[in-house]
Every structure is written in C-alpha cells, then in structure tokens.
Image (cartoon, rainbow, N blue to C red; front, side):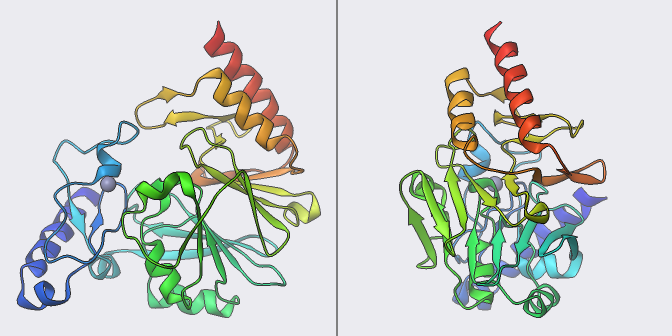
Length: 297
Ligand SMILES: [Zn+2]
C-alpha cells in the first residue's frame, strides 16, 4: 500500500516537474528511499549518492523521487511528549529511512535534534507553541533530509554538522554551520560529541537535564537501541549488516565514557518504544563488551 502511494507520488512529482512553472522555479526533490532533499531543479536528480553508498541501497524498482508538496497530501506528523521538555516528531506513513526527530526545550531556546522529511504548517504551528526552534543538530547524513526547510521555517536556525560530513550535505545553504574538532557545545550546556563510527563525523547530543536530571543521550542510531532495549549495537551499515571494527568501537566508547546519562533516546520506535529508559550507561558498556567479544573471537 505504502509503495503504491509513494510510487504514485513520485510519478505525480515527475509530471509536475515537467510543467513550465516547475521548470522556471525548480523543485527541491526528495529521494523516496533515504529522504535526502536536493537543490531546486527542473527535473529530479540523476541519482542519490546517499543511496548509492555501500551503507544504503537503491531499491530494486530503482530510484524514486517525491516532493514536500506531494508529502503534504499523503503524510502527517505526530508530535508526542516523551518526558518533560522533550518531544518526538514522528511522520506516518513511513517515508525515507523512517527515523524520528526530537525537540528539546531549554530555558535558552529549543533544539531540533535529528530531522525527518515531513515539515508542514501544522508541525510548524505546534512547534511554535512549544517555543520554536533556535538551533538544529543532526547525528549523521542519513537524517539530513529536509533540514534546510526546517531551518528556513524557523528563521534560518543554524544547523550544526561536523566538518567531516561536508560532502554529504546535498543541498548546501548558509544555515549549515560546520564545526571541527571533537566537541561543540550548544547554549553552553548541550554538548555535541563527535564519536565517528557509523559516519566519520557522527555526533551524539548529550542532554544533561534529561531523565529528570540524570542525563539523556540523544543517540540517533549509534548506539542503536536493539529489539531488546537492554542491548544496543554499533554498525557501519544497518541495512547491509556491515559491522564496525574493534578500534572504532573502542573509540566510540572513549567518547561516550565521560558523559553522565541514564536514559538513551534512539532514532527509531522499536516495538512501541525507542528508548532505554534507565541504566543506559551500563547497557552501552555491556553491549560494547559483548560486541568486541563477538568480532574479536
Ligand atoms: Zn537516497
């Protein structure tokens, strides 16, 4: 059902792209498979480098494209409170990789953590009720999707991305602020930590006020919360099951070690949840030990 409607959406967007108006103004097409949005063009891009990368895949039916205009007719966001000052933004039906985004409210302003393709008037209006978005940070390129649209909808909010991922920013824009080094702090108390691993410039966000002051790790998909939420994992490619090597896992652990956190929020809702509610730090340590044993024999 989903495939049919998305295929129809892709055909619809192709048709509209050939119209004189679209040719004049251009359309910022989105890859249906990964959600990446490309710069305005009269017709869809030839290919999606994100999907062609070994970590992802081009579906057997080939590359398909859609537009935000199409998604507005077929998709809807649900904004759900996860705990005090934390909201998840969930799109349905699934589009792209299927991750969720988060809004973290702080006294100094709100942060959008990670991103997902659908942004519409209802979403912007609800987020404005919650205080808007002052800063944006995204764990890795698989979630960049329509980040430029999100920034523009909230006054050009800066998007913090590690310099190592510059080549994966498919729609360059002045609102993207590349940072270098191992740590960048937003508002003085929300550190982005560059862990590498799944992507060279992979970053997590540490939210010290989360979990009632015990701290929360906004992990994206590394560490990835497993089917058993007492376990997490670390992969170079999730769809193609390509593991990370032992030195890389050790490096990720060294980066996470100094952070105080009890809870982990992941990018995906797994079996109705997407959180390690408590004991997160121990879960990560135990899972890393197990992973190292498994890959080292
Ligand atoms: Zn793609």
